Length: 325
Image (tube, rainbow, N blue to C red):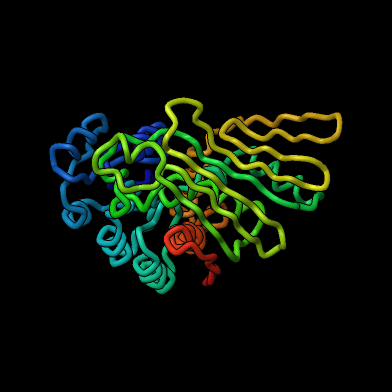
């Protein structure tokens, strides 16, 4: 029997997931929920028998769904997850999982109470290059890491305000924080410096910093820095470099480059990480076996705490210790 899937959110992520899910033979996209019924109906139009809704509660009342994808802005979390938990419907939610620590902590408690299957969209974990890097790190000692997320500011109103997105480190660079945690272990302390250099002065209503650097201490004793900017018009890039006793491992969207004395080895990402992420989640929904999911809600909450701590440090000018659950 085909899994019946609902999607909350009609932006790029919601439509991307719908397209990839519909390409599978074991899934039916049955419903979309958006900020208006017109938007949801337009998103549902390409999918046979799919319907559009402006209320998640009405969608869940009228549709028998096996799982739901949540693809909404950071400020829009809470009611959607509560409704799904109440009905014991597994969900995959795109990062970040909220704006504060309190709401995700409350949701996590209820998820654990119900034993609900969840997945969070940290797709860097599903890259072939990431898996190869983890294998190589088993034979090496990590000394330090350098992460980066460099680009321009999205032309979205909510993204440009701290109360809408939480800023770039929370909304985008969280991918690099999570990748660092995944390959190198837990983060115990952060110190951040953010600034407003370009965008705020040339765009009205912008309240997010457009540059920032965060120093991180890891439980292993390794140290890392992660920098980001949303101020540059060209030269976009994101990745994580791992400096070890054998050389450097460079992770990016394209794969992994391993640099050792006199030797350069490249490992391309041959599979689509979003498709691998979907396969892991849908397998769990179908069988109850969540072992293939690489980022549960509980794990993503730990990454979320690090990004919030960076915001706190930048605001206070003081280091912040991470109290992991």
